[in-house]
Image (cartoon, rainbow, N blue to C red; front, side, top):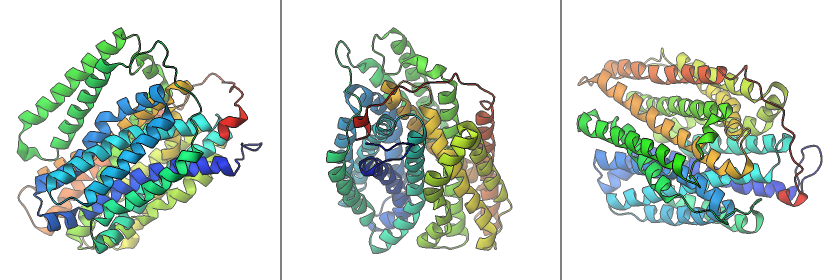
Length: 477
């Protein structure tokens, strides 16, 4: 049971920590693998294409199945989907650690991405379902979002440490963490609502069309990283994705039980949150990739040094659950989110004059501002994604949000890679590498500014006041 005035008792905190553990697991898993890629290549003798495919396979599984995962949680039960796919995540992360061939890693990462696509929106829906709208939900989502963002930044350091003992530990460590979370989740997590299945059928045509569309579109974005592969395949992937997306819209309009109720897209806060999330992660993913190139290839820093350099961004793990909820309660979600987006754009702009001899003190303002940006933006984005949405569609809303996040991440990586490769050409001189990197840095700056503009467009929007319905005490038990 929860206590008065927005305070939570021990069981409520236990539920929240379990759900936070799962989203932390997802973030740290991705970050640790990125740091360990050079070690994996050296041990297994993987080609550049296969190594890139190890990352892309996860992105394809995650981005391709996210909307299906979100709606499945609403229809089949959030707790059931959360526990089942957490188990799948555990198993295939372990199998990746035993891989001896490139194809084994590709399969393991793809299925791990699919499991995350079902687990993440179910987890978000469980958070919003277990904590009533108001101060308790604001606090819970602040903790949840801070943990999610902190998982990625802390994963960079953890990956560097684990890879020094052997890259397989990057896969085995999530297995141990998954097992602990699963054992705690079984007795603690309760589904706040039983799905209404009577008279409803699963929208298989919609599921196949939207999954195919997301797979094709994400694959097209990933291909942008490798312009040498030819533009015909990239254009074909985008064309197929758009055609399947159009077919999905037609199917959903005619379906009595649509996978995605298209009317949900009339929610201004939801649309702005998804566009904002896409651009926010697009800018950060591109920036993080470029900084990694700069520190390791142009400056000769180790993976551990690189992770430590970006560790300060993890300050959001502390600030998001403590400072952000207070700011949201005082100034409103949109204003806090806008401030976070502006800080991110400013942080990227401050890094534009980067030089080959920059001291870390010159980079530190950017890292600090990014930590503050994540603290102010990530939680409010999560709150805005479910703002005004019916409780029985929170899984779908979570699926839309995480689809935007994953698509933005893939787009940011591909865009900066394509610009960097085009600007560098065949020149291998360090100064040429720096010039190309500075040109590619314009992508995060532009995406950050555009994201702030999207959020600013909703600052004057007014919401009709909502009176939250009474929530039974057992909901927070």
